[in-house]
Length: 258
Ligand SMILES: [Zn+2]
Ligand SMILES: [Zn+2]
Image (cartoon, rainbow, N blue to C red; front, side, top):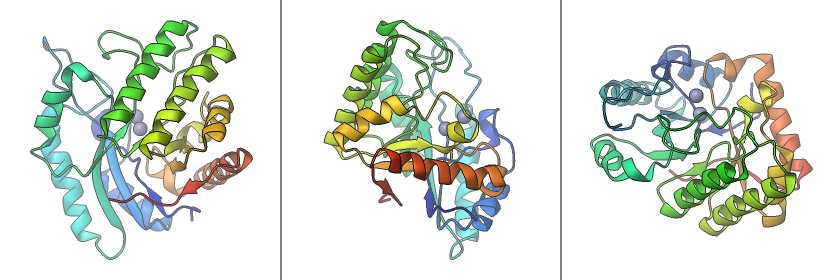
């Protein structure tokens, strides 16, 4: 059992780097004791010139994604509340077209999950260590604009940029994200997958800025495998996320209004 009521950050096999059937994720969340499960697989974008982005579903899979999760939501009603959204970058150039596309589907929410500092065909993954403060600023500009757009439920792994340059520059940019999120009343995620896999995030330096701004936090399992709800490491990761938030004196929300 996880010490967790709700999770809004769950992937499916459609993104090519998650494993397990949609049903297995739901069954795992039920057995972990969750009351609310939100699916938020990596959103497809209407890229130009035939570009195919690997770590996300194709536009042609949206129909199947929503149909499958809706059917599970109805089947598991009374056992667990299932919600359906997407995790998306805020790609301004593609945004109007993206929103028009998802308007045809029962998409309840978007998580802001920025993984690149520009369009993914033009830049590398933010998890690759970098020390160029200009790129960190570019990432931050996009996250702040995304928060201010009002289109997102919360900011997933706000600290994903693996910036190895000066701590002062990092803290300044972190502060901009925290301040924008606070002004928008939007929580920041403590990412349990990063915690579990001892990644470079959750990053204390980011959450020091959050502590100064008084942000609300929320735990995201970021499940890419059903076991991310059920194994011993899952339990430890959630406990570690709670201890992490406590160490900064920050409040963890149990759920989001949907
Ligand atoms: Zn992923
Ligand atoms: Zn994710």
